[in-house]
Amino acid sequence: MTRAVYIAQTNCITPLGFNVPSNIETILRGESGIQLHEDVSLMPNPFYASIINDEKLNTAFAKVSSETNYSRLEKMMILALEPIVKNSKIDLDSKTAFILSTTKGNVTALKNDSQESFQNAHLHTLSQTIANYFGFKTQPIVVSNACVSGILAVSVAKRLIQSELYDNVFIVAGDEVSEFVLSGFNAFQAMSNLPCKPYSLNRTGVSLGEAAAAVLVSAEAKNSKIKVTGDSSINDANHISGPSRTGEGLFRSIQNALNEAQIKPEHIDYISAHGTATSFNDEMEAIAFNRLEMGTVPVNSLKGFYGHTLGASGLLETVIAIESVLQNKLFVSLGFDELGVSQSINVIEKNEDKNIKTFLKTASGFGGCNTAVVFEKVKHELH
Image 1 (spheres, rainbow, N blue to C red):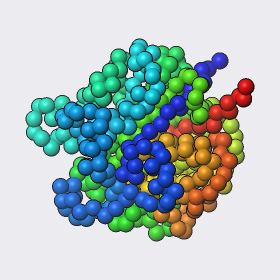
Image 2 (spheres, rainbow, N blue to C red):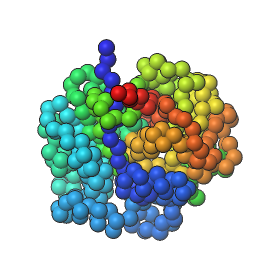
Image 3 (cartoon, rainbow, N blue to C red):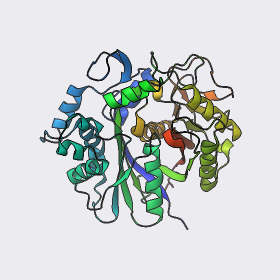
C-alpha cells in the first residue's frame, strides 16, 4: 500500500500580504498587486508588475532575525517558511527533507563583480543559506525547472515520502522581479502594457510578479486538511519558450495525475491553472482541458492578482487553491472579460460559493515542461 501524503501547513509572502489570511482577504476584495512601476534600476520604461514593498519586507524580517546580510529573496523565503517550521514542532532530523524551488534564485548577486557574489548566485548556495538558518540536517534539494518549479516541488516531496526516505518535507519557493527577468520577458515581447488578462480576447501578455510560498508536506494525517493524491510531469519537447500547440505535454500530465488519483475528469471540482495571459499558453491550456473533457470545470488563473511569480507561482497558487477548498469558495479569475481561446473553458467570473472536494493544479513552462497535481479534501472521521 503506497503511503498517503498530505499538505499539513501553508504560508505565503506576497505584495497582497505576509500571511495566507491577508492574501485571501485581498483576493475577496478583488484587489490586485499589479501596479505601474517607474524604477529605472529595473527597467528604463514604466512597467506593470506585482512587487513587494521593501520597507514592509525589512520590518517584517527584523522581527524574526537581527541579521542584515541576507539578500532580499532570502528574507522573503525565510519569512515564508519560518512560521511553518516553528508551528510544526517537527525535529529537523534525517527523516525531514528541505526543498528549495526557484527559477532564478539570487540572480541579482551577479550585478556585483566579485567571487563572493558569483558564489551567492548559485542555487545550491541559496538553498544551503536557508537550510542553515533553520538548522536542517539533511542536504537541501533544489527544484529549478522553469515555471513548473513550485508545483513540481510538491510532486518531488510526495515521491520522497512515498519512497519512505522521509516522513516530512518542508518546501519553500520564491522568485523576485529583477532587471534580468524583466529584460528577458521584454526581449520576448511577452510583457503586457496593462495588468495581465488571462484567457481574455484582448490580452496582451504577461505581468511579472514576486512572492515566496511555503508548505509542509507530510505522511502525518493528523491535523492535515488536504491530501496529495496524484501527480505527473511530462515534457512536450516542443520549443525552448513555446508550448505544444496541441497541449500534448499538459494533456498527458493531467491524464497521468488523474489516473494515479483514481479519479475521473468530471469529478474534479476546480482547476487552478497556469494562465499566463500569453496567446500561446492560454490557448494550449484550453485545448488540453478540452481534450480531457474538462471544459466545463471551473478554472481560474491567479496571475491577475499576483502577476507571474515564476518559480513561486505553482506553490503560491496551490496555497491559495487550498484555501478555496477549505472555504468552499471559488475565487474570481481577475482581469477576465471575454473568452479569447478557441475552445470553451469555464473561467470563474466572480467569487462564488461551491462545495469543493478535489482540485487540480497545473503549470507549464519554458523548455516544454508541464506538471499536474491532484489534491483532495481530507475527510476526518468524527469520533
